[in-house]
Amino acid sequence: QVQLVESGGGLVQPGGSLRLSCQASGFLLGSFAVRWYRQAPGKEREWVANIGNPGTTSYSASVQGRFTGSRDNAKNTVYLQMNSLKPEDTAVYFCSAADRFWGQGTQVTVSS
Image 1 (cartoon, helix red, strand yellow):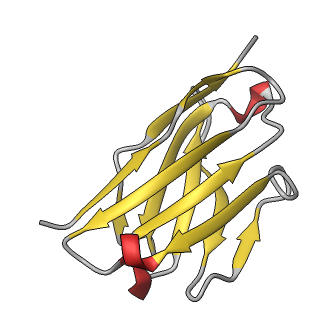
Image 2 (cartoon, rainbow, N blue to C red):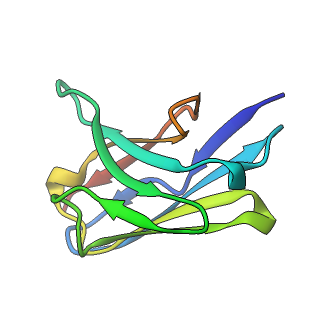
């Protein structure tokens, strides 16, 4: 069964950090570029980061310099390290494998 599962979300104070994971099963995640998106309440889905293979990365301007993507093909997993989090980073974060396979999302809430 093809599946992508995000994890690592939660509640964090402004300035804090979280690391999101996107683990694949049923296919080799290393064969795909992985994209992270987020969607805040009442807003459209927003592209956040692209993690290519073997690991070239690109980021939206809103997260550039604060978020870092990486991948561990041995674990069939991609990560998004999020530092210096801001309240405006609050959203449900999704990963996708080349926009073909999607995870269910993980909630990130940045609040004091």
